[in-house]
Each structure stands twice: as C-alpha cells, then as structure tokens.
Image (cartoon, rainbow, N blue to C red; front, side, top):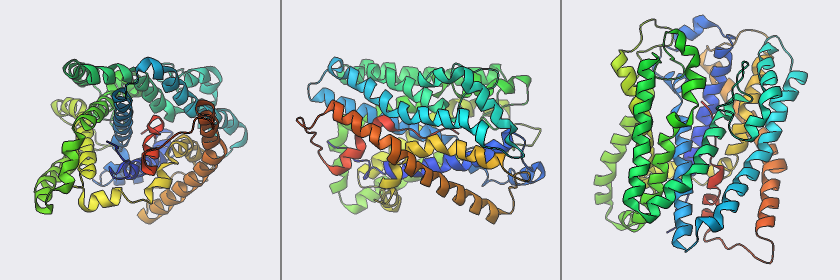
Length: 446
C-alpha cells in the first residue's frame, strides 16, 4: 500500500500548521520581551478567538504526529520487503542528519551571530541573549541536545527546541517500530506504555510544581519561570504525539486494505460513518484549543487545579488521536469538503518549504520586532491581519531562497552519493515521492 501525503491531507495539515506557528510567534516575541501595549493585550486576550494565538501549541503536536506516522509507515514498508534495520541504519541516521543540519547551521550563523552585528533598532537589546547563548552552546544545537543544554541566556536559536525533540524521537523510533512489526503485542505495550507514562508524568509535574496548563499560562508561583526549560521542551513530556503517530503508521500498514475498502462503499454509508467521527474529532480539537479560555492571560484567578492537571494529562493525546483519525478519514475518501480542502494540490509546493520556513520565521520576526519604532500594537484587528500576512509572505519568500540555495542542493548531493546514476531510484508514484521526505517532517516551535 502507498500512503499518499496528498490524499491523506498531510500537505494541507503541514502548511496550515506552520502558518499557525508563525502566527503565534508574531505575538510571542513582543510579549515575552515586554515590547507590547499591555492594555491592548489585556483586551484581546479575553477574546475566545485569541486562543488561536496564545494556545496555538497543538500546531507543534501536529508535526510530531505526522513525523511519527510517516517514519513508522516507511520503515515497516521496508521491513515487509525483507530489509533489516542493520542494513538501513547508517543511511537512516546519516541521511537525516545531513539533510537537516546544513541549512540548520546556516540559520544558527545568521540568527545567532550575524543578527547582533547587523540588526539594530530601538528594541534590539533582546538579540544579545541569542548571541550570547550561541557563543557558548552552538555545539549543542548541532548535536540536537539543545533542549537539555540551556545556559543563563536561554537557548541558542530558541525555536529549535522542536528539532532536538524530533531528532531524539527519530533516533529511538526504530525500537518501537521494529517491536510493532515483529511482535505487535509487545510493541503496543511498549508504545502505549510510554504514552501513558508520559501523560501521568505531565500530570504529576504540573501538580507538584504548580504549573499552569500551557506555556502562556505557566501558573502563578515562583516555579513558573522553569516551565519552559524544565517541562515544555523535554522529550519525556512531549513524546505522546510522536508515539501516537508511530502507532498510527503501524495501524495503517497493517489494516490499509480494510481502510481503503471504505472508499468503494456507498456514499450514504461513508457519510454515516464519517459524519460522527468528524464531529467528535473536531469537538476534541476545539476543546484542546479553546477549552481553557476562562483562564485568561491577565486574570489573577486560574483554572481550578483539578482541571489544570486534567488538561495537562489529556490535551496532547486528545489532539493526536483526533488528528490521526482525520488522516485516516481522508485516506478512506471520507474527508468530504474538509478532505478536499486539505488534499488540494496547491498545498504541495508550499509544504516543500515547511522546513525552511520553520528555520527562518523566528529570526525574521525578531529582526522586525527589534526595529519597531513604537511598542507592538495588537489593535486594530485589520492592522494585525495585514501584519501577519505581510510577515508570512516575507517568510515564505525567504524560505524559497533557503530551499533553492541550500536545502535542495544538499538533498541532491546527498541523494547522488547514496544512489549514483548507475543505480537509478524507482519511485512508485510522484505523490509517494513527497512521502519519502518523512525525515524532514519539522515545523516548529510554539
């Protein structure tokens, strides 16, 4: 079976998710550096709709789900062809490291070192932190352990905490995938055992340290300052979506015939199955994003602590299973208008730029904020829309340059070394070619 990133809506999910990440960071940088009109902030954060900004963290979990799903599916596909992990191991790790690290290193050079020399403005002092952290900790980024190596000035190129987590998951993924393929019972026990252990650990840590439910609501105690570096970016608290994705890839590889059979059933039957599943999954996703709205950013009264702990335990697995179900529905031709929208072919070229956009967007936002001539203004709404669309366009144009000048040439050279002209690569379908880039399933941070 061939899982298509087009028919499953993965390209659309990828593009919408990275757009959501960019939206969140447009506000994150001014807010965290107190370069904002806080009276306006108090007004907009009380809106339900603004939860898309201050609680946009599920966008990151979406990328973890997609990455785990594709890595699992492709590896099991190779196992079914008789390949062993020993024969794939060097290519598996080296291929990913080279493809990701070369453009990553260039962004570290630009954002971590050159920015402080060439980006100036009334609010540019906050750039010193990135510069100072990169002077001492750049090596941790290149080893993908920067979510554990955090100095006094914070993390070098802070948005790349996601890359560290994703690489760590990628390194360990073959163990779970092999067990799922070889001994499904043992594999599922291992996979879901780690999922539930992570969920319980999230609840315990939230309770013990009085953390809030999300990064923009890190509680009202002195421990709040440790929320990001000790909890939010640690892999043992963030692994749930990735492991759900791994399990989802195994489920699809095992039951794809049954799933694809639904695409040939009568439309009425498909509708009767799909409608309640879409309603349930959308309701879950809505609850994850908007369910804690009453815990407003500037309100002194937080959510009841039982609800905070419950949210910390359940929100990642709820989002992950809901998204995975929607991917299955799209693959089974039960996506309806949503499936057609997510499967639109226009998403494909934009989805190829996701990694470049992820690497560049935070630095471009930093440069823009540093050169503001007045405090960041959230209102009026039309101004905010123009600001977002303008920055998003600039980020994508910059992403095109990084993709064409660095990312794609590195990929071409690396592929030439692995498969010289005397050993041509046969692709099953053109769409499947995009699926083979699962090792680049990265966005970003939130």
